[in-house]
Each structure stands twice: as structure tokens, then as C-alpha cells.
Amino acid sequence: MKDSGLFDDAVALLSELIRVPSFSREESETARILAQWLGDKSIMNLHRRGNNVWVSNLHFDPAKPTILLCSHHDTVRPSEAWTRDPFDPVIEDGRLYGLGSNDAGASVVSLSTAFRHFYDRNDLKYNLILALVAEEEISGPGGVRSILPELELGIGNNPSTPDSARNGDFAIVGEPTGMNLAIAERGLMVLDCTAKGRAGHAARDEGDNAIYRSLKDIEWFRDYRFPLKSPLFGEVKMSVTMISAGVGHNVVPAECRFVVDCRVTECYTNEDVLDTVRQYVACSVEPRSLHLRSSSIELDHPVVQAGIAVELNTFGSPTTSDQVTLTAIPSVKIGPGQSARSHSADEYVELAEIERGIELYIKLLEKIVL
Image 1 (tube, one colour):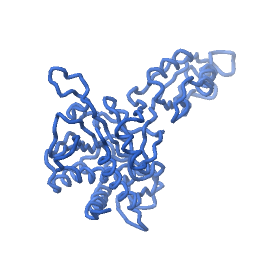
Image 2: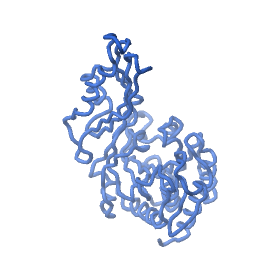
Image 3: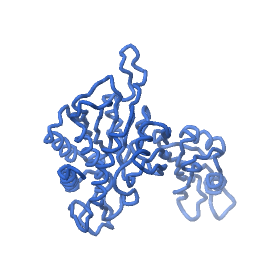
Image 4: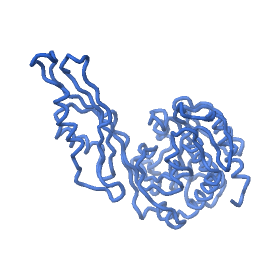
């Protein structure tokens, strides 16, 4: 890239982040590192709530639309399959190894570097807010959801009409996508299902077996097809993934519990899927949450058109991110690294991926016409 200093600073920052454990809800030290890094780059107007850090461009103008650059600095816990020290940022053969290097440290440092590039420009047609957030891996309440009211995205500029949308606000969410542009994302809904029977002795013709009662419902989850198909994802996918019943080999179980993983497309809301499930099954069904929603953005949106102009590939992402929280504004997901490396042992990111990520973030922002 033209400014090798930006790239070197990004790699140094990522290495510093890797050295510090930042499990979800335990990200205070990486939040401190990020805040200090931004301050050291003479970036002012810094805000922090909990373990979330955010900052706006120097010449922020409330009359202009705002682009949110958002990525997360929390990580999952390392598995026992690691053969390296997950907190030792080693560079070998052009790869930077370490927990969170790919998901989503590379996006954090690349978005931060792109923001730094534009920070003091006085000719921007839009505002920029960089938000480096916590608790993404657990969709926790202390993450980006906790700071959205202060970001005021999608809020009108006229005090007399506070509920009107500010024209043009949208988000770029940094996640490992190989710098391909995700224009849609599946939602996730986990269902806890319970079939009720009646206990009895297995040696006698007693009781009402809850396992047998659950079979018809489990078969329904396997076989049912929602009529609407997404052009990017195809069908809504429902998978029974866990089951539990019984207290002893000689006792007819009075209760059978099972879990269903629902991957929802943009054709339906989570509530739509839940209503359909409850219409057809006999067991009780309780969603763990309804807020992990699918999302999509129109192909003619300026950020999508800018992505096409810089020759980015578009796709639909099967994984969830902080996009599920950013329902007030359109969003896309893009970042260096590969999704398949996320949460894997001996996680790494290619240094060339970080360099390309910085370049493409800058090109994308330069191409956007609002």
C-alpha cells in the first residue's frame, strides 16, 4: 500500500491486542489499548462505555449522513486443540498467529486504520463513527446495543421530528469475509421445545412416553419447508441439535426436551417462523431470544454500488454478527480474513489480508456517493 506506516501500525496494534485475553465481558484491557492507540494518533472526541470505544471524525457535521464502522474486540476462549500459545503473536511465513487475529482483530485494526486515514478530512460528504465494541461473540447487552442511543444513528436532525430517519445513515460491519461484501445475513433463533407425557414403570403398560410424543414434532422440524425462498440463502433451515429425556432405564419419561437451531432468511422475521412452528407442533416452544434477526440491503444502495465499483464480490453470509443489532439502519459486512478460521485452533490472519483490507476499506469509502 502507498503508506506502509499505516500498515505497520495496524500489525503492531493487532499484535498488542493478541497479547491480552479479551474474552466476552472481559475486554477491559483491549478497550484500554484501543483507546490509547486512538489517542496516540491525535484522534480526539473519544468515548468509552463499558468495554466499548467509539470516536467520530474531526469535522463531524450533524447535517450530513453518518457511516458507522463497527467491529468487535472480544474473542471466544481458546480450545484445547491449540498447539501454540494463543496469546503469543508470532509471525511465520506471512501469517500472524494468535487468538482473535482473524475474528475479528484484523477487521478492528483495518477499520481503525481506514478511519485514521479519513479522520481529519474536511471535504467528506458524510460523517464517520468508528465503534470498537464488546460482547459480540455472545450477543451480549453490554456490546454495541448499549451504545446505540448515544450514536444516534437513523435519528432525524430536526428536533421537532425526532423519530424521522436521517437520510443515508448506514453501517459497515467488520468481520472476516475475505473482503467479499455480505449484502445479507441469516438470522438465528434457538428454540427450547418440551413434550409432556406421564411417568410410569417400563415393565408394565403404564405412563405416556414423552419421547414418543416428541417424535412427530421432531419429524415436522426435519420435513417442513417454508414456502418463501431467499435468492441468496434458499430455505429457512431448522435443525434439531440436542435432546434430553428420562431418569432411569425402567421409568417411562414424563418429559422430553429438545433444542432446534433455526437459521432464518430475510424472507421472514423470527416472529413469523415462531408463529408457524407453534401452529404445527404439539410440544411447548420457547425462543431463547428474538433479536438475532436476518438482514439484507438493497442492491442499489450506495455502499453496495461502491463495492461493485471496486470489484468486490457480493454474497449472503450464513453467520451472524453485530448486524443483528443494527436494525435501525442498513448495513453490510466485510473484512479481512476467512470465516472458516474463526474460533479454530491456531487461528491466524495473513499479513497480506490486512494490507488488502486497509486498501479496500479506503477505496470503498472513497467510492460511496450519498
